[in-house]
Length: 185
Image: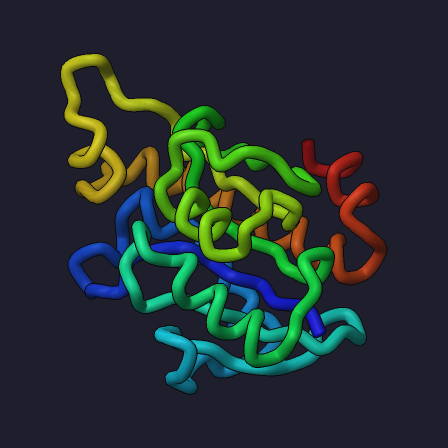
């Protein structure tokens, strides 16, 4: 079983922000593969289904970004999911909007959600799909940038990133992560 976690913030006020790219990818996978993400457990909303012949759990932690690791730890412990079957999807300031980056493992960098996941799993050895959101202008507060509103032009670019992230996950499940890295990085 593969665990696909989209990081984001649960409140409606955050639903259309840069910080919810992970939730947006989960929403796209949910629609595309008819997997309802409506069960509540593990401090999360989740749903189970099949993508490319593989059993998957789609997970949206409801803990807020900085505590995402609590939710991931609970479901990983419950299902005994090995690290190599975990895929975390999240926003990344260091990647331009509309682009993605896939990694087999790595450091959490400055992303508090991934720092939390790393802390609770006691490892960096899980795959990740990072959705580019770009950096704000120097005079814009970072927190306001990631959880603030998005203009229409940028919404289209971010949607491209979400679509690429969705396709990358499908490629990972269909073939493997190396294939997805070659195709999308």
